[in-house]
Length: 153
Image (cartoon, rainbow, N blue to C red; front, side):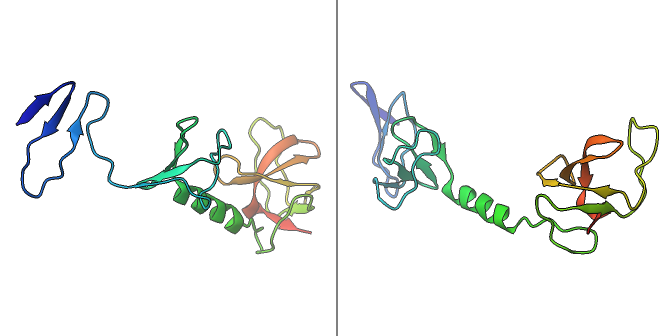
């Protein structure tokens, strides 16, 4: 099936099959290589401007980093669209003052966090699960809250 020629082997000429060398370092042909262009973004690891496109990936020839540009654009769009709203539907921002809408138990605390408690100077974070507000609550200390249990004041 393969004919030896030096250190490389070539596939026999079968009609309809692409001929390509089979070498010990690579086994499959590259179907599409676009050469370096001014329109491609720089490498996120080393900031090299000499990136090129190979199939669906972008490749940096200097540090050999490969990444998916489409996924990078999708993440940026999600970050822009990620608007955090309170229980009533008001948009929250860093530094807002909110109040708790319902009483809830806090693990490790002796008392519950009561409805109407004011929380000042909140920070919006991508926390664990649904907890997307980081704040310091008087009497409880630093904690993460769900935006669905607070109301903007």
